[in-house]
Image (cartoon, rainbow over all chains, first blue to last red; front, side):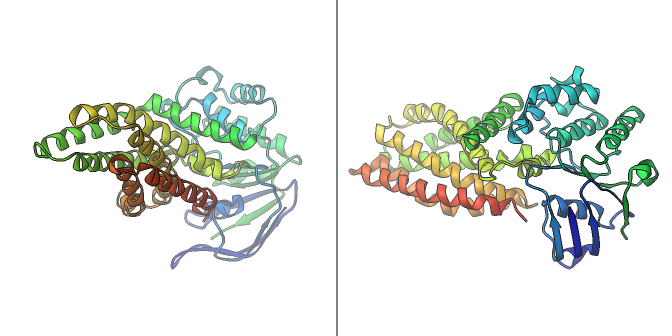
Amino acid sequence: MISARAVEKRYGRRRALRPLDFRLERGGFLVVTGPNGSGKTTLLRLVAGLAAPSGGELVVDAARGSLGYLGHEPLLYRDLSALENLDLYGRLYRVPERRERIGMLLERYGLWDVRAERVASYSRGMTQRLALCRALLHEPDLLVLDEPFTALDLEGAELLDRQLAELVGTATVLLTTHEPARVEPLATSRLALG
Amino acid sequence: MNYLADVAALARKDLRLELRARDTLPAMLLFVLSTLVVFHFALPTGADEVAAQGLLWVALVFTALLGLARAWAPEREGGALDGLVLAPSDRSAIWLGKSAAVFVFLALIELVALPAFALFFSPLQAEAVLGVLLANIGICAVGTLLAAMAAASRTRELILPLLFLPLAIPLVVGGVGSSVSTDPARYLMFLGLYDAVFAILCWASFEYVVSE
């Protein structure tokens, strides 16, 4: 599903990602690790199509709209509520039975009771939960998650553990983390940067 | 139909954000009214109507600039533009939705600004009002695209006026012409042509603005 050959990224003279080779088959689960500044986020942005490689070849066999992306920023509107944010994305992604899907995700991630409140009033952890709901809303074939456990409390992290376990085999997952042990049982391949 | 539904959803989102946060409209309204008041006292008594019409357009263009500078702020704050770009909808729908919302903001401001102008200076003819509406389309089409380009830069407050004002000159020429010329139809057609050409250019090029 993803094939990278000598893919690299530079911003001017600064190298954000060293030349890299890897393959990830459909249904695989790739865990990317590495110290800060090693290019994990850059790699994920390249895979998501949010940035273009400066060199090498990167092939991502996923149709637009079949990718779920969770970045460092939540990709949400702070002055809209959880419901309004997910409804907007649900419309743009043409999610069938949108309201039911949104309701199910908000219930699952413990945000149903605060669904009508502005995202600006959420804690960092609640925002991260909502960002996960957004990334999962359209049931993506390829899930690209940049340090998804960041800011989650114990309950939120366990919810995500369960979610990831459910996704094994049904979706392709590319995930960066500083806690590789947490997702080790799910990983089909690993990539260490830096 | 999906395309128009996406545009409507995106424009509705911007209107809702503005209704809730009230970041842009009050500032635009205050700016245009205070500018007209300043012009009212700055223009010598007995100054001709042509000068006053010119000042109206100065006020409108700079008020629009104020709104355009804030146009992409909600997308910038939460990284939401990435979310929109990743969606399967046509990327030009993002531009069109934003342009439509900016058009509504501008039209709402002008609902107050034009009567205020009539109060301070002289009433506007129907051709002049039509000129304002046509110029709005051009301002929103071009301004929204340029604001998206500027939003990616750290110096956006500087870049946007530098990019926008030169491209707004034809709109000012057409707008003032439609207000004071003896043949306003010629200027209205000019504005219509500007709108059509630049709307197509902006619609087609937005994809490249949001792609790296």
